[in-house]
Length: 368
Image 1 (cartoon, rainbow, N blue to C red):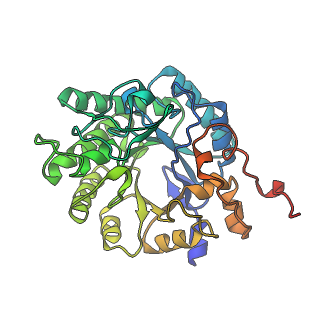
Image 2: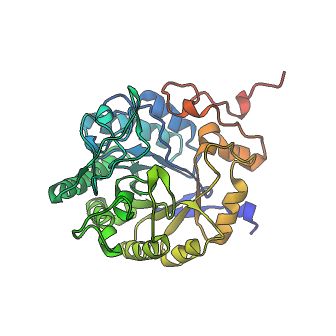
Image 3: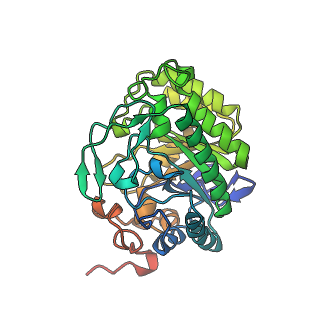
């Protein structure tokens, strides 16, 4: 089988065959209502992209204090469940499948966004500030989580996971990457704790494992995935022991037999990637590093995807390529040109522009 053929070969996932190996990665789009309820526009957006083998819906907060930015969806009220149910019903009717990413921002939050003071492993603020409805502001110093905060947060992840199933999702992805709360526990520069949740690698991975165990006990490990970003410096994370930490964490997670491991900015040439692949017993989703703040490659990441499949990944997640191309699979299969991503600010500004108005093949305007 050629690499190109492998990209469009079937894959058995969660009891059913996927038609191909391409997954839509979770992407924050800021189109929910102010209270976190998913909108009708979100339903349209995801339904347009139901051709993805699997959609992992955008970062969704399990509680109000974990909200990162304005207009982020939640999964902690009845209204949230009802709103997401409309999305999943529409996507399912179009032949799609969905997981949802559960993300607690930790120190990546602000009282003007959530109405609450953020909490984090340690009282260390986000250095670069944060966007709020009033504009860019300095970050606040988060409250260092005590035992009650930790237990309450784990319980909120469990409730959100149960709500996700009630909302029609096939499962949840726990976000332990990109500088958000669980990643803040993993990294030494954001975790200065001296209790059982800090210090050694065993201490710093304890919170992630506790969240995973509680969620898996509530909805089943086959409905739970996890996202990790070894070495990624998003939100001012600075890992000092990436090569030592992640094999220990992934080996522990492997014992849980989760649905999948999702690696951010996976590098097929990295010895760590191959080490983690060898440790992981179920589906490995790899997200290629296509750069940020730069145009996508003309192939939308196809060559990078094929390299990762050759290196051992089972599925490939793409973000901006799906954002700009609702019919990405058809375009890649036929060799049709891809839509470029429009101005980056349109990703987060609300409304249909740069969201649901990207053309599909039968509606591409002819050249003048």
